[in-house]
Image (cartoon, rainbow, N blue to C red; front, side, top):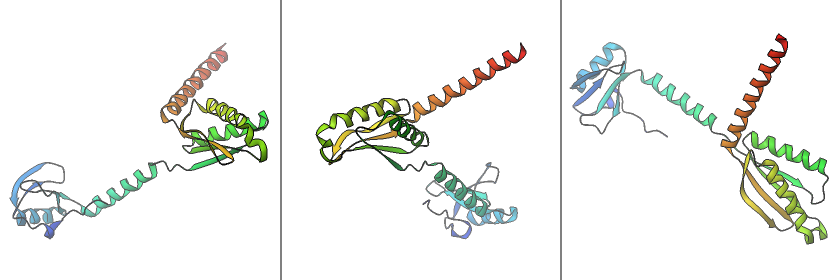
Amino acid sequence: MEKELRINEQIKVPRVRVIDENGQQIGIMNTRDALKLAEERGYDLVEIAPFANPPVCKLMDYGKYKYEKQKEEKQRKKQQASTTLKELRFHPNMGEQDFQCKARHAREFILEGHKVKAQVIFKGREILHTEFGEKLLKKLIEFLSDVARVEQDIRLEGNAMSVLFAPDRKKIQMLKEQEEKNKQSEGETSDAKDEK
C-alpha cells in the first residue's frame, strides 16, 4: 500500500517549494504562505517530494487525487490475469475422437490464459506400458505448440503421467494477428467477388 502523503497542517517544515494546480512552479515560500495560497484557490497543499531540499508541495484536490489512485489500482488489479490451473484427464488407449475433443478444450483454456495440466491415468496393469501415455502426451504437446509452452516436462507420478502447459503470450499474440490478417483478406476477396 502506498504511504500516505502529508497534507495541509501535517506539513511541519518551515519552507517548501510550491507547484500550482496546473503543474507550474511558483517557487520557494514559507509553509504558512503556501497553505494560505492553497486555501485561497480552494485546494489542499500536498507534500509530493518530502525528501527534496526544500520539500516539494503541490496544490491539488487531495480527495479527488486519492479517488483517482484507487481507481487506477482497481484497474491494475483487474488487468492482472488471474490464471487458474485446469486439469484434463486422458486414458492411454482413448480413441482419436476423444483425444481431439480434450485437446480442443486444452487449447481453449490456454487461449483464455489458464495453465493446463494434462494427465494420463493408468489403471491396473496399464502402468506396465507407460509408452502409450507418453506418446499421447507428446501428441498433445505438438497440438498445443503454437499457443503454449511446456512448463513442466512429462513425468510419471504414481499411476499418472502428466505434463504442465502455460500460455505463450507471444505465440498467442502472433496467432491473433494472423487470424486478423486472414479475416481482412477474406473480406477483400468477398468484396472483389461482389463487384464482379
